[in-house]
Image (cartoon, rainbow, N blue to C red; front, side, top):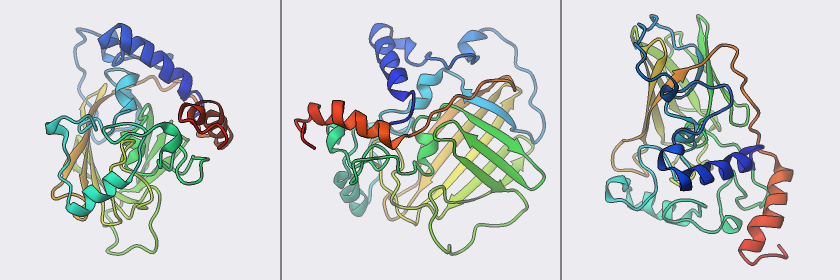
Length: 287
């Protein structure tokens, strides 16, 4: 389990049950959200600059996406039904997530991050799931050659070339975070194209599958000085009959001194959770 996640999740559940709006307004210590600055007047955005520390503008709870990708959660609603191919639906139903409409008890999950076949968990989250599950904080840095994205979850990072190169036609091997290239569509919109993701990862916590044919487009639109609108689109013709938007989220700029806390996946803590919580709940005390 990710360090600190269990305590945070329990607090969120309490808030969620007591006040419906509180889930969205859950906060990280020291963060500033839109509900803290009601009535503020927007300041113009800087040109070709998305650098800074960014958090979900509506509150930390929005970034958890605990029931699957934010725009298409696995909740059984017809409007959230993904355009699966026959193979995609078969793969989806074969996965065993611990959330969503096909959820099983955590002790029986095949989620590679939470336990999978080994029972230890902590396989890499991978991309795009690193943005579609526990997306709490991202620090973006720019150089003349690259845009670098540092994530709170498991201290991962992506280096995105911006030197005009294109994605390779073929890849030597798949990568957990794939291969990415970036470009400016205009002075306020940065676009990232990614491919070559390892298909052992899931798209989100609800077990949505992908193959090595997956292509992901991210669009970062600097709306004003304090807001960055992120849109992420999934395109995998082997799993889905058409592209679909998984994320459309407003991020808010934080102080450069904001304390980005640890959120690590620790195999020993996952084993303890399985032994004392997940397995007994599933009647698997001796596992």
